[in-house]
Amino acid sequence: MNLLSFRYFLEVANTLNFSEASKRLHVSQPGLSQQISTLEKEMGFKLLKRTTRQVSLTEEGAYLYENLQPSFNKIENIINDIVQFKQIPQTTVRISSVPSAASLWVPKLLKKMRTTLGPVELYIEETTSKAAIQAVKQQQSHIAFIRTPTDPNELRDLDMMALELSQHPLRAILSKNHRLAGSEAIHLEDLKYESFIHYHPNNSPSLYYLLERACLEAGFVPNTLCVGPELMTIENLIGHEIGVTLMPDDMAGVMTGELVTIVPIAEKDYMSSISLIWEESPYTPFITQDVVNMAKKLFSHYIQD
Image (cartoon, rainbow, N blue to C red; front, side, top):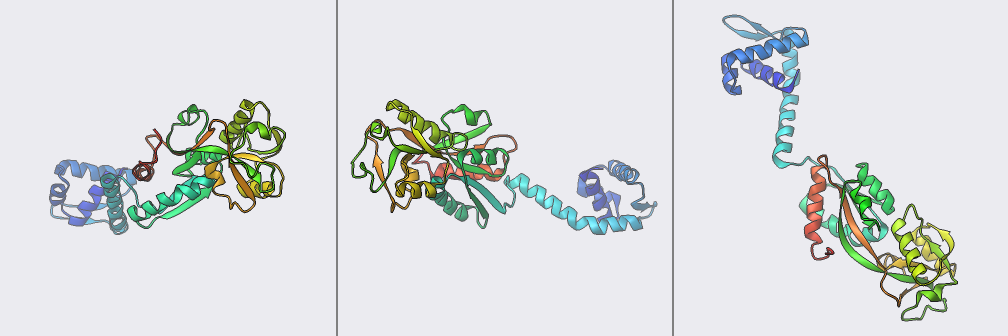
């Protein structure tokens, strides 16, 4: 049984005339008759009473027609819409984002989406870059804003595309009472004997390796006090004179600034970037590509070459 066979049956049931039905369907009358006979054999009962004078519905045929006709019209309309417009009525667009991008980039995109896509339900999840990548890969999120991986092959191996939006230099995050808090800029070697609030190598690998690299190039291995707290916890710990850290300035900008001081680094800029990612495959939903195209236009003057 296939959809076309039922379409033929509904047209015959509607007209009760094989000749008229075949004209409407643009098929030959013998071919139409054969399709109906095949459908009846597959279903195991007669749908039509056929004589030389008239065609009528059996009891089973009438039941099938009455219940199938409304649903079939809806099915055809749905199929026609998705083929014509290359999209489905989308009730939810799911976005994963690291906290700094959720503050900077996501609001701009959401405002554009609401004016372009109309009334859609938006689901925003703040999470780590690693979790955001997995959410896109497992189709739990349509797109994600992440801290760009240090290894460009990481996304490529997962069949993901990335659009780098912005780059941000590392800053030193110190308590307001820290001996270097009033400096215009500091040398990393001045933090050699400090205790660092570090990033988790699995959950935040880009930030972990960036902090490690910066300290190693300054001639020391960071003395790790603790690993992996949330941004608010980092601010509170440092604000209470428990450790220091290095942080991209977009992340630092999310903090309230009431408890900590953000100080530039005198050495070369150690950069961290934010990228928009999505899965590139034959099965990528239409809405994903629509949102990505929208983001490309919206952020065109930000996109890094």
